[in-house]
Amino acid sequence: MTEVATSANPGLTQPLLAKRTSKRWMISALLTTAIVALPVLSVLFIALFPEENIWPHLINTTLPRYLTTTLQLMLGVGVLTLVLGLATAWAVTMCEFPGRKFFEWALLLPFAIPAYVIAYVYTSLLDYAGPVQSALRDWFGWANATEYWFPEIRTLEGAILMISLVLYPYVYLLARAAFMEQSPSLFSVSRSLGHSPLSTFFRVVLPIARPAIAVGLSLVLMETLNDFGTVDFFAVQTLTRGLFDTWMNLGNLGGAAQIATTMLIFVVILVTLERYSRRRQQQYAARDNRDPIHRFTMSFPRQLICVATCAVPLIFGFLIPATTLGYYAWDYFDESWTPDFIENTFNSLFLSSAAALTTLLIGVTLAYSRRLHDTRGMQILMRLSSLGYAMPGAVLAVGVIVPLAGFDNWLDSLMRDYFGFSTGLLLSGSAFALVFAYTVRFLAVSAGSVESALQKVTPSMDMASRSLGHTPGNTLLKVHLPMLRGTLVTAALVVFVDCMKELPATLILRPFNYETLATYVYQFASDEMLQHSALPALIIVLAGIIPILLMNRSISKSRTMA
Image 1 (spheres, rainbow, N blue to C red):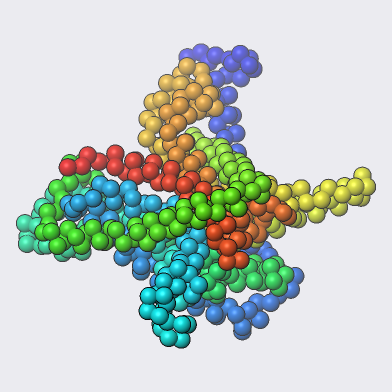
Image 2 (image 1 turned 120 degrees about the vertical axis):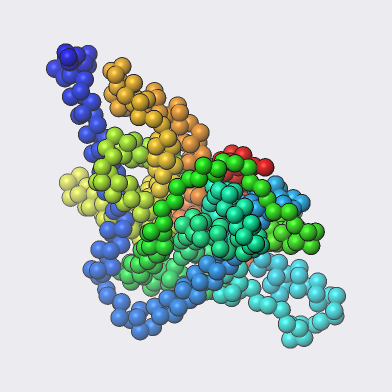
């Protein structure tokens, strides 16, 4: 068969041009992965070769306390989110009770509230000077705190409760999706053998859904490890807080990197355990997994138990905090609506939009490169590019600031020597550092979404486009991207909201006199001025509701319900 030369370059045939273009995609993926992995390598390098090695001092003084408290926090949050997530997911999926359809999507709403925001709200409500204790003193005639007992919110137990109330949707979301994918015949067989709904849950449903639950729980624990606002406000000595103290207060970057490396070890252990837990589990879809689910009918008292099970986390995880923020925002609107607030809102919108667009472009590049070169090497590159999502924000900030500051110093020295002027901190002292950190941290969200959507596009679409003379790039632009429009919008929205809420990396990397809504809320709330931070906190919450509704819609459409 005669090969036709391209019009752009008569010397190149179409197969040769396509091969060269395909290689460019692979090279782009390789370079992108190298840049994304740079923060991890930087942290490890600084930890191994610090300017001042304080590792022995950390081991003998503060590190054991950081480790112990972090493990206690992760254990407490893990247990509580597992109980809340599984109980609510089972109730709305398999039980029929009043308000079930409402709770299906409403139980995701606590996802929209950052953990540090809910901590500020409940501290304001439950502290000695708060409305709850003030009302109790008025009602019972108590004069001071010595005359009554009230639980202290600013404790390790309080931090566990606050973080669990906003992270249980991870387990709920994945467990519910796993329950909905199971075969109704399994439930029928279990019931015919005399098992109750509760026995069916523990003996049949839970073992099958274990891989999805393990993924949700690992995400919860990684987010717990990442938290800074809550543990800082409650004075809980975790590794994240220790990293900030070592870097910001002691000024020791090497010690901070060594603590960051310890946190990375935690992440590796979590990911390894999650994969190990499902190493021998390979499940296939049953023929009837799309049939309607026949939910359990229960007596009225049991229906009330289901309502209470779903209502408690929703009330305390969303309704009370959102109502409190709304009241404060309305009552202090004139004091909150200031030029600083408007500027900070613009900063958050700009940074989040830039990061969402960047992660989307890079995610499409990586996912499409994987489609063109479905090799073991590309699979490894995709996993390496997702490392940032598992890295706590504080660790990522350490890894980002080191190479960027090194480049700035090199460029500044070069310009001083040859041209006689200083360039200053072009990268590490600008918004570029934040966008870069956001991109590395949330790239896995966009890349994973695009890759999953591309796998559903039949290869015959690519073949048809190539037979018409289109290059891989033209095929992506004219065939795949129009088909992936919904996935791209959803992925961009999720990254946008995650960037709006990100606090640890933003606190470390933000330029001087540059605030976002997250840091704005943190500063006011840290000064016990929640009322003035309510409006920006409410905006963060409202922005987070949009992707939540989209996620619920996609799950609900995955199966026809009875």
